View (tube, rainbow, N blue to C red):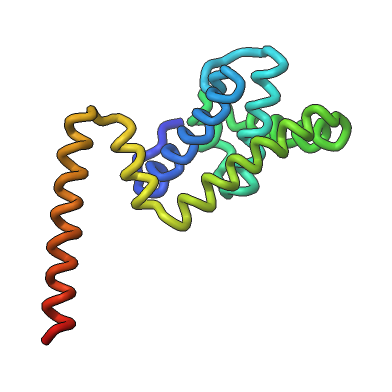
Length: 153
């Protein structure tokens, strides 16, 4: 299924990318690539369940992002519940990643401009970052001078 790149879908894909990067960083597992290893399927379950129930995303959109069918995502969410209730190690892993995802979700709700700016900075050269920092400092000085002028009048 092809999804239009609407504003909502673009935001969701950005958030999904952050979450999949968190998983990659902590486990070395790329959940977007297909595979049947236990660790990978567990991470797909955690990602899918969080995306479905905390982010309120549709099964087919989660599947689209993960290169899986919506039926696979439904199955992942159902088995997540069963495994979460019976396996302590899985539950601890799920709670760890859910806390990480919650932190990102909270920050993106609180401060989306800061998160977007940080992602742009991450991908930019040191020279470009120095230029931007200089421009921001000049802007802050100008704002400060204007505030002082307004307050003194």
